[in-house]
Image (cartoon, rainbow, N blue to C red):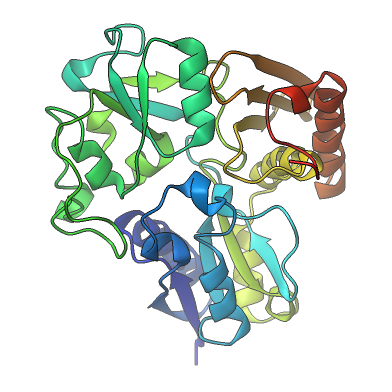
Length: 342
C-alpha cells in the first residue's frame, strides 16, 4: 500500500499551483498517495499591509501549527515567507530547483520602468521593492497594495486580471480568503511582482520588463519553495523521506541558505528592505552572493558582494553571515532597521 501523505497549503491560486507541483514530484519519486489540505493563515485573514503585520511568519505559522498537531504531514511554503529562525520539531526537508528569482514589472501599454512618466503610480506590497524602486525612480508614486496576483494585475490599467494557465479565475471576483472584493480596478500604472509566481500561474504575458538582480535585488529565497515536515519524518527509509531526499536540490539549497543567513545575522525580517541573491558558479563551484540594503525612502543604498566555498549548508551559512558582518561594518544600520535595537 502507498504511504498516505497530507500536504498543507494556503488556498490562493499561486499556493495551490506550487503545492500541486510538489505533490506531483513527490508522488513521482516514491509510492505515495497524496492529499492536499487547505490551511488559512493570518496573512489570508488580515487585510492590513504586510509591513504593519511585521511580515515574518504571517503566511507560515498556521501551516506549521497544522504540521505539529498532525493535520498535515508536509507543508509547502514560498521560501521567502519563512522566518529565518529554526522551528522546534520541524525541518526544511527539501528545497526543489529554484524558479526565476527576478522581480518583474507589469505596466500599462508595455512600458518599462525608465519609460513610466513622472508621478506614475506603481503598486507593491514589499518594502524591499518599494525602497529600490524609489532609489531608481524617486519621481514615482509607489503605492502599498495587497491581494492575489489577479487582484494586483487588475489594478493596472489595460491588464486582464481574470485568468491564469488552465483557465483558473484569479480576479477580484474570486479572491482567496482575506482579499478585499472591492479592490480598485485600473488605478495604477504598474505593479511589481515575482517573476516565478507569474510563470507558475501562466501570466508572463503581463510582464513588460524583467529586472536583473543587479537592478532590483530579489528577496532572500525568492523563486524557491520550502518543503517542511516534522523532524522525525525527514529521516529513515520511508517512502516520504526517500522522496524528500530526491527532491532536494543542493545548488538551490546552498544559495538560499546563504541569502537567509544575511537576514538572520542582520536580525531583519522578511519584510525588511533587504535583497540578496546567491548562485553557484558552475565552472568553479564557488558560491557567489550579493546583498543590497536600501533606505525606505530610496535616498541611500548599500550593495556588497562575497564569494566562497559551498561544500555544505554550514559553509553557505557562514558566507551569508560574513557578508552581513561586512554590511554592518559599512554602516547598514544607518539605512534600515536591523539588529536587536530596531
